[in-house]
Length: 73
Image (cartoon, rainbow, N blue to C red; front, side):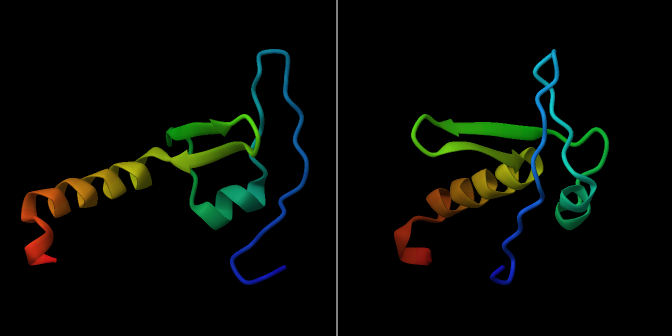
């Protein structure tokens, strides 16, 4: 696999629609009990999971850039 790319295996969806994130994936991405994940979906490309804390950091960066304006970047 290319550096930074992973295949963690196949998971099953339980009766309640839950999945278990493989241990290696949790270790690589630093996922801990209680972490929140945002579930994104594209009907043609599938699903993606994103740590909510990373998304909030990205949103903060965007807001700060908007406040500074294009001339300050």
